[in-house]
Length: 564
Image (cartoon, rainbow, N blue to C red; front, side, top):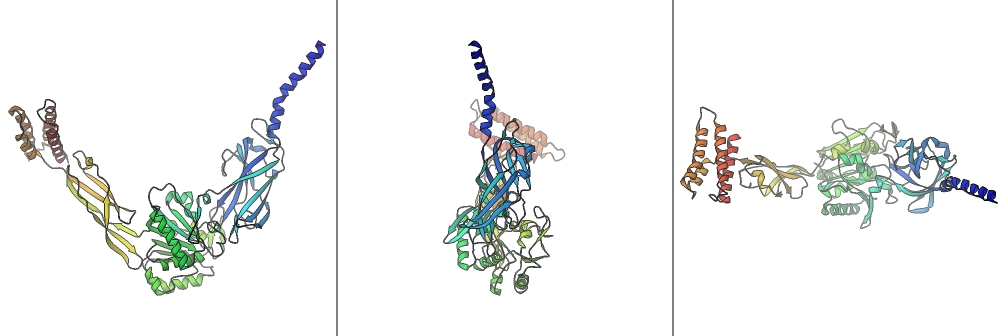
């Protein structure tokens, strides 16, 4: 009997030893793994660039292979889920592990598995929009490989993957709204503490069938919101949908006015641009509000000024027009420039030989002759103006604010003017000088005190301008020995104390009067001794704090006069 009991406990002990491995297998087998779509807004259009699978623990990347994964997508229109735009496979070009929940950071091991797709493609299920509509994309992952191995020695054989989110780093920052029937999307630089410029982007024809597509077909709207452009030129972006009429432009202007009223937008730095139909919309906006924008860039515009009067109304507005030699609108654009160009004093037409993108992912691909916006918004560099970005953000209706120079004496607050002269560019007449009210910042009294910098600047807020007025204040430090002698003579103190102070002042005056020798150092020493003695007279009550402060400041001012 005892041998049977012993054998029983031995079997139980062996089973207990095996329990952890059995438990680990139960935890890892048959898992449902979540994944997200990673979208990228490339120059031509937004694409689903990768899938990111969260495995939950560190995976050995060497156990993964492209052949392990099949990916399928069904794309339906956001505004009509019953319309299937694509139902098929996606080409997988790479599979790798990553330590971060993002693409572009492959590592030997990582919690995340990245399934990478081609950055360029047409009709392959990768583009998130087509035909003027944006899609909802439902992805299915089929895993065909062996167990995925973790670095801790355990493994997993996933049975299913579930799509949990869609991430598009730039486009996710845009919001959608409607004003009086006008759909629009917009981007705010949330880090801004003061009004910023605003880029108003008008999309091309056939790209506004829903509210989402205008900023997804090509990056005419989103290029301004890209992190690299925001770092160089912080700005807000407004992208109206199907705004082609004068009535629509009034709605666009109302949205901009609201942004200005909220303190978001600098009213002197609003830039209007768009391509094709959006280039025509750019001109419609200029015809409707000729003196509002700071600059405009119509690209392959399907319209123009329309009349000599309209051209004269923007005669001094900075305008930069682009077209490709192979564009079907080429003759129209060139004729508009020939007819109305003579009335436009700050206008340039740039004609590109081809619409080529050299940077990844396009690597030299030449696009259709009508797609001039692709190089212009992304790569084209003019030999003098630089990129369109550089030129646009250098423009402002405020061309200059007059410099202010004032003087004061130590201890006296400067008197600053109530108005400044502002040079404002008006589209029809050019630069006009205007008197505008200014509210100056508070000045620290130490700035014009005896120990101040001598010259300092003050900024002021100018009416109707984000640009600041600047006043340069020069402080004069006087020789106050005569004033000090008069003050000392009038003190109600014993003769010996009064004489001790007066002797130091007389000696300082004598040293300064010596024209044959530079005895300024001796004079300063006498004044330092004078200040020291004045301080010593405070505690015993020979001088009041007020008397002493007045004489000490006069002594310090005289020292600044000598040493300057």
